[in-house]
Length: 238
Image (tube, rainbow, N blue to C red; front, side):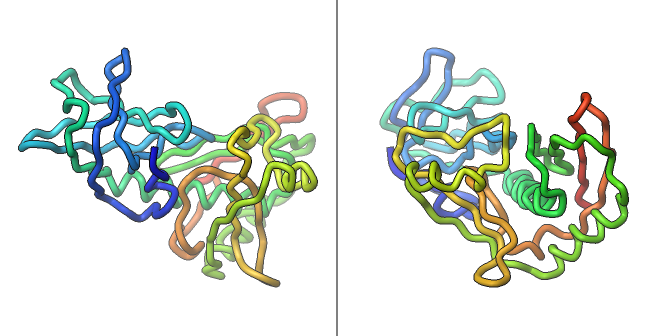
């Protein structure tokens, strides 16, 4: 399996590929996957694959072995045969909104520097659950701080460290409920800002925008009590 294209370039909207497997459930595995598979609170990509004058709509992608994305057809149709050369084409608008929301949630974890107990990404909004015994004192201040980070137009980049390096720096992991995937020997880190302007560095396998300014205006939504010490904070893209 080649390196996933969604990881190498999250802005790539279309790419060639070769069908290398079918799953017993009717899923399709394409070498050099373009579709991000559901994981880390981020939904799988949708779109279509094309071959020999035919098109198959893809509802989502789920995680397979290693770096494989298993494409799930949106309707029962004949699948491209193993060995077929296909074109993978994303629903780009939906992918890009996921990228914006995902990056916005990284900013939320900066503005509210508390342990994260869960999260979910959508096309128009996202939420994080925090280990937060007390209610937010000033919602407007949180929203203002988020939009100030957007306005700074900070660069978003990624890199890799070894599992041993992560073990030596456990504070990099903000999420209590989901731990970075292990077994490959290396962990992907997403960094927001550089040098003295760095505001965030944490393990993450999702797709993000290249600069915070691309997120656009953020509006803080509900803050819900989800337990004795758990509060859910939702944000929206305007």
